[in-house]
Length: 208
Image (cartoon, rainbow, N blue to C red; front, side, top):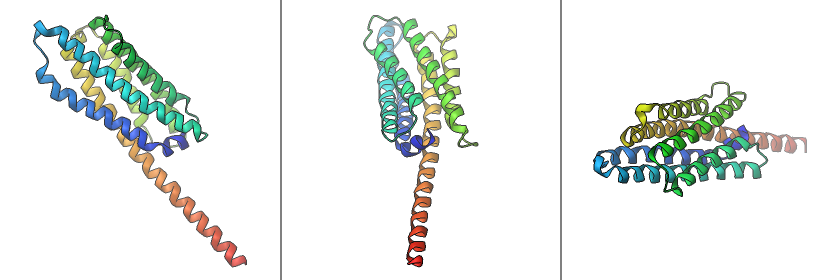
């Protein structure tokens, strides 16, 4: 799995950028959340915003998993993560009859599953990188966010948008940090491979 993540670091970076852009968008959107009389419009906005965010990040994650599988990597955790996120987004997007409570519960359930998968992946990653905790932290953040959504006081559009923007921002920063670390590891691997090839060529020419 570590080899797959290193080779596809840029896809994790893209996922983090999506999440961070999503958080910034919500902070810009928040002052324009309609008054209680336009509650339904705000609810529709929440559903569409999360659905687009989930679909975009899910597709990117699935792409990373498929690329990893094609390169001989173990990618089932990443694939499951992408499928869960994409499915949650599509269910909300194509179910206009859902109530606000149902949408919040679906968002919470989606993030809870994603968090559990990211925690498992983070534990697996720490077996190879003992000081790496960003993916694990991202999973814990997802689980905490899910439980916050299940709290009764979270059942309004403004509160959910606030929680969602904070979650996306922190999780996005964690993903960007992880991707940057993997990029440096990728460069180190290529440098070691190039040095090994140079040493091998030098020994072969010396023997000749």
